[in-house]
Amino acid sequence: MKLDHPKLVRLLQRAYSGEKAAAFAYVGHAGSLRDPVQKAAVRQIEEDEWKHRASVLSIMQRYEIPVSVYEEVKLHVIGRLLSLSCYFIGWFMPYFFAGRLESGNVCEYFVMMQYFHTLGIKEHDEVLYEMGMKEKEHELYFLNQIRESPFLPLFEKIFGWGVRSSNDVDAENRVPVEGATQYCRSGGGELPKRSLD
Image (cartoon, rainbow, N blue to C red):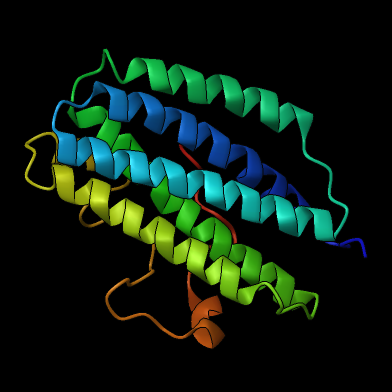
């Protein structure tokens, strides 16, 4: 079965390649950290990204969606550059931009669910919900590492993400899977611009 939904197809392709870029970035991020607890936490997030990539590929294969060579090459290069940059840009920026990236990734999965529902498909709800919530956990982890930084208010004002600027997914008061399509609708079902693009 092929999907007659170009936006959903593009979103799946972009998410698949984006997970690789994020995982690559976290290799450098973890490598640049000295604290063993922080290093282990970022490595776990990297592992989660690889799992998400495999889950997205499984969904793509179900609908015969090809991997986008363009997205794969572009995001491979971006991920490697981000990985390398973590050794040079200091402590704050890798955490900030990782949190901003994860915030957009949260909405990718809930918007996918919305798109699938327009086609009458609900079989992927559970996995999309779990991935979206896991990305929310990642976002909160990164935010909590920099919450007290004096740089955060300025970066939040410039880049539109931080303590007062995020998606509408509430990790502490989760709605059940059946109600999760209410998330990330502020833009009419459109995604916020990703930091990797």
